[in-house]
Length: 119
Image (cartoon, rainbow, N blue to C red):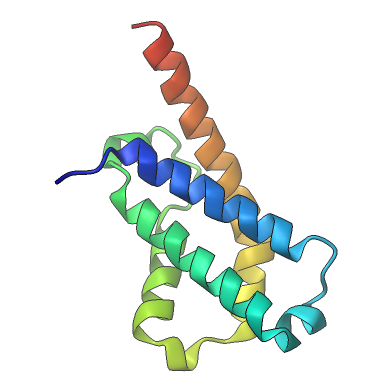
């Protein structure tokens, strides 16, 4: 059974928004010492990376400035090299890269919503 790619896009948006909410007002020191917070962010980074992999190339190419490979690579790192995950790299991805991918995901969703309304 195939799943509509827009559902993956919505998953990406949901996970990115969760990360933003989880980290609001937090410092790296808090993040680095709070095991549940770290694991929650890590899980949502994995969801984002997996969702990005499921987006069609045509959709991703409609936003050429977006870094779609970064989240997929982060997901692979977490899934296959979990023993080498560096909290500083996770923090950087969550605080610097996730907001950008969230913005691009919202743009992609808006483009699709506008396009489907005119059909």
